[in-house]
Length: 370
Image: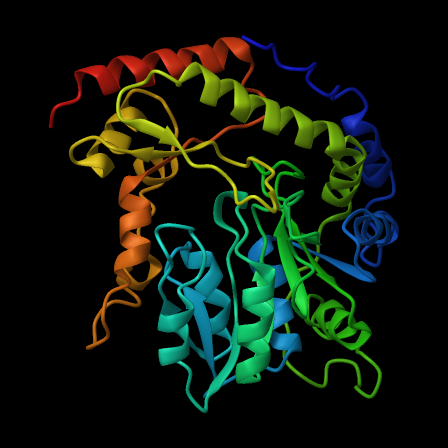
C-alpha cells in the first residue's frame, strides 16, 4: 500500500504565538490578525478576508452584512449542523430547511424553489465533509430568485468545483479554523469576499461596531465581540504557510483508508463529481449494511470517530429547537446521514492509526448483522 507523505513539520508553530504574547496586553493589537487576513485573501482568491473568533461568527457577520434581519427567511440545508442555522436565528430571521439529493449530496433545488417566499433573503449552501455542489446550478437558482448566496465552507478549505473554489461562489464564503479542520488555529474563522462594503460591515460587526464602515458612526448599532485573538491569528498564519502540505496530507490519508477498506463488507467509497477537486476532509462511504446508522454508532463505540456515530449528526430540521409544525421532513438529508460513514481525521492520524481504523471497520462490518 502506498505510504503517506511526510507529515508537515509543526516546528515553529508557536513562534508567532510567543511574539504575539510578548506584545500583550495590548487591547488594540491587530498586527497578527491583519497579516493573517492579507495572506488568507491571497491564498483563497478573495479581495478581502475578515478574521473572526469562529466559523459561526464569520457566518453571523456575513449574514448581517447582506442585511438579514427580523422578518427575513434564509434557505438552509437540513444536511448541516446547528451552527449554520444559529446565526440566522440570532439575527431575528427564520431558517427554512431545504432537502438534499442523496445521489449527489447537492441541494434539492426543486424543494428549495417550493420554499421560496417574498421573505426569502438568502441561501446558505453547506459544503459538508468538504464536498461541493454544482456552482452553476447554485448561481442560476440564486439569480433566478433574486436572493444572495453566503457559503458555509467551514470544512471545505481547498475544495473546488468547475474551477470555482469553495467560498468564492456567492457574496461571501465563511470558513472555520476550529481544531481538526485542515487549516486550524484551535478556534477561529474568517469571511472571504470580493465586496469591500461587505468586508467593512463584517469587520465592524465582529468588534462592537467600534471601527464602523463608511457612512456609519462608531457604536451606532449593536454588534458583537467576535474578534480573533492575536495569538490564535499568529497560529493560523503559521498553519496557512503549511496549508498546501496539510491539504496534500489529508488527501493522502483519505486515499490510504479507502484502499485499506476496499474489501470491507458493505462499504462503498463515495466519489467526488468529475469536475470536483475535493479536499477529502472526511473519507466517505455508503453503508450497505442493515441498520446503517447503528453501525456507525457501533464504530464510534469501538473508537473509530465518525460524523453520525460520534457527533450524532442528524438533519438540522429535526433538532428540538426547529422541529414541529406541519412542514415535511427533509427525507433526502436523513437518508444521506443514515447511510453515510464519514470518518473524522486529523493530521495526527498516521499510518498506524489508519491501519487500526481499517482493521476495526473491516472486522465489525464482517460481523454486523443487526
